[in-house]
Length: 267
Ligand SMILES: NC(=O)c1ccc[n+]([C@@H]2O[C@H](COP(=O)([O-])OP(=O)(O)OC[C@H]3O[C@@H](n4cnc5c(N)ncnc54)[C@H](OP(=O)(O)O)[C@@H]3O)[C@@H](O)[C@H]2O)c1
Image (tube, rainbow, N blue to C red; front, side, top):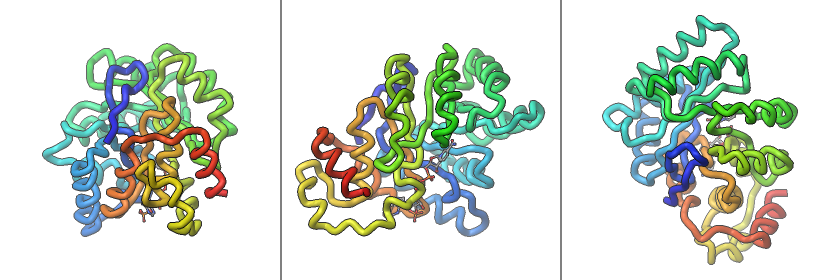
């Protein structure tokens, strides 16, 4: 798995990690099943994991599956509330879940961004947060995100990027590169919809020289061939899918012609 410098954060990240929205929002015996997915995270080196208090049980379940190995993962999570007391509760819970340190702490969907950045700045000064991030999923909010990225306290952004959702190419990715921000790519498979399309093996044959043997790998390589993107975080409930996705994290990377070809296949 390739590792990249994560903007100017001083961290290095594996280019493929894992999201937890929906997939880790489980209870009971399913928690043990998700432990197998986290086993695959460590087996493949896809050790950048992302969660949020917005994702139901996901933060808690992720922390349970990291037990005994949290130090070997890069944990990204979020604060998601306009209420100050709830924000304090979310922070206390996350620090308890993740051994007192959050590697990348993000303001989820820019909710109460100014107040949350003040809190995250204090936590970073105390040494319990290593990098501060902002996320948004919607192109309609990219104007606000673009302005918020100018705050010098921001180290990282998390944005959607895949062959069907390319809005970040206009100004978000160029600005992130200019400012030396770390870039996390959410929704690499457009919430799975890009994978519901049947792409025949013969259509992938021209991509074989790039080590691509599956459609999910082609999509991840399409993203990661843009060096402004540092880590893509596909969510999965399947150890087998995790392994397939992790294999999209090795060079060689695609050139412009192959990227255009993958984008055509995704149409
Ligand atoms: N505002 C925000 O901050 C925000 C918003 C959205 C997302 N995110 C983050 O980004 C992460 C990723 O986005 P996402 O979860 O929306 O969508 P995604 O990663 O684009 O797609 C996830 C879906 O793809 C399927 N999948 C994954 N690997 C597969 C494979 N190899 N073969 C077949 N199916 C596969 C999964 O099903 P299986 O379980 O069957 O594998 C799941 O249904 C989230 O989990 C979350 O951590 C953040």
